[in-house]
Amino acid sequence: MKCANERSLRYQVEKWLAPGSMPVHVRQFSRTRSDRRRYVCVEALHGAASRALFFFRHDDGHWCVYPPAPKQSNMRSERLAA
Image 1 (cartoon, rainbow, N blue to C red):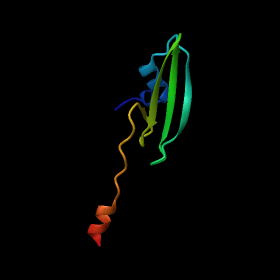
Image 2 (cartoon, one colour):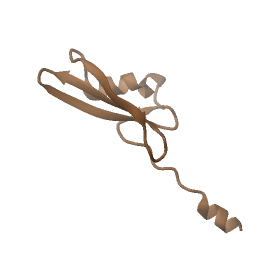
Image 3 (cartoon, rainbow, N blue to C red):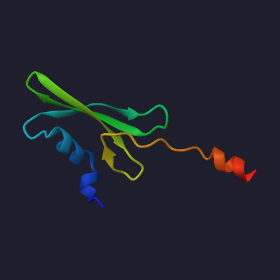
Image 4 (tube, one colour):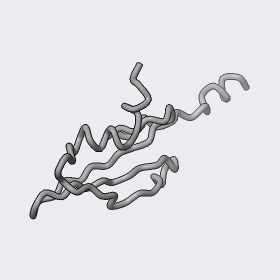
């Protein structure tokens, strides 16, 4: 099990963008259209170059660079019960 610190957005930004001496800022944050899950786009500036990554909030509260799996519909179980 991951420690709580590893679940934080700050930890993930430092892990993936290694800001150390680079300025880092949030470029965009919102929710996905399909299932209203939160995401954040973070950019690290290094001279004239920049790097940006999207981070997605998962159901268990941690942030990852990949989106959570889509929720499955319960339509099948409802049809089988009828």
